[in-house]
Image 1 (tube, one colour):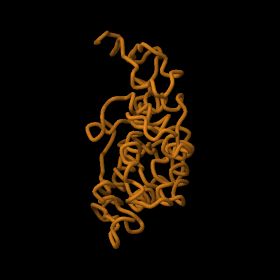
Image 2 (cartoon, one colour):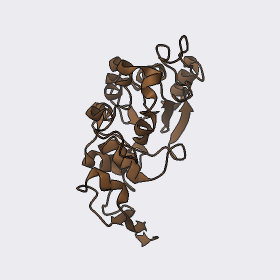
Image 3 (cartoon, rainbow, N blue to C red):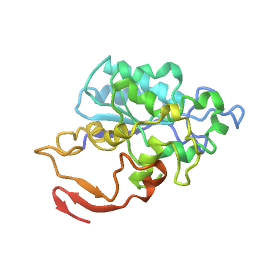
Image 4 (cartoon, rainbow, N blue to C red):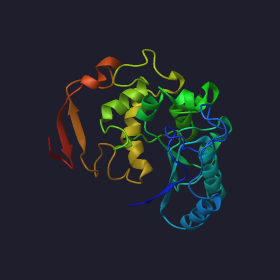
Length: 250
C-alpha cells in the first residue's frame, strides 16, 4: 500500500465542493475546505520524504487549486512521486498547467461526468462547467491518465466507465451527441487508463496492468471486440471468461 488518502472538500451534488466563486444555484455559498491549508501543507511536508503517495480528494476548483499549490510547493517540478488528486473534477483554466509541471497525477472516474451532467451546469454555470470532467485536457498534461469507477459511489461496471470516457454518454445513451465531447478519450486511451495507467498510478505497473512476461496474467475474454463495436453496443458486451493470475475464475 503506497497511498495516503486525504480529503480536501465534499461533493458537488451536496454543494460541499469548495469553489472559487459562489454556486450558480445558491447565492453567497462557495462550499468549504474540510481542513485548513496549513493542515494539507503539514501532511505534504511529512510525506515528501517518504515513498508514500499523497492522494487527495478534490472536487471544486478552489479545493483543486489549494491542493495543486501545496503539492507544487514540495514536488518542485518534474518528479516520480506520483502524488495524485482524486477526482480532479472542476479545474480553473489557469490551474491545469500545475499537473504537468509538477507530475501531479489526476485520478478520474469517467462516470462522474455522465452522472453529474444533468445538474452540474445548474451548480456551476455554463462557463465554469467547461473546466469540469476535462479528461482529455488532463491527459495532455502528463501524457497518461488513470481511470477508475469510484465504486460504491458509482456503479462498478467497467463497461460504463468505457462508454462514459469514449462516448460521454450514460447507460441510456444520453446525450445523443455526447457531453462536452471535446474532452472525450479515444478507445485506446481509455483501455490504457483502465489498465496500465491505473496500475502506474498505484506503482503497480511491474506487477499488473498489461500482459507481459513476469506480470500476473489478469485478463478477460469478451464476446465482441470492444475497440470497434458501435458505442450503443458497448453495454451489451458479455464477459465470457475471467482469469486472475493465470487461473480461470469465471
